[in-house]
Length: 150
Image 1 (tube, rainbow, N blue to C red):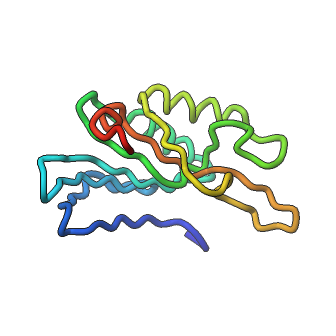
Image 2: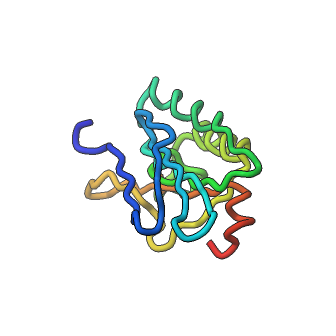
């Protein structure tokens, strides 16, 4: 849509087989199986909508994902939500959005894996830019137990 958006998932077929589990307007979920072990896992690549009503549909979908205790699941991408008002370089922001986003993460029991490098992942590209962290990487509890060095 316009100058941004879209999702792409690539993998090395010599290491993993991948089958698309779900494809939505704002996410692609792929189930992977290792070619060299019995390991299986799920990856959801996300590009969260910025405007309503798609934004509410996205967060409702995310909150209602079925992250069972036995699944190795990674969620990653541009959620277009920040977790704290401190994820911005300027005062202000939408506290309600942070509460909604954190509630969904808590409801799913997800564990954040911190991104290394820059503090912010988005800029409005102005002379005095607004900077925000909108990209996130989360794992299911089972992933963290099975792959503790992640």
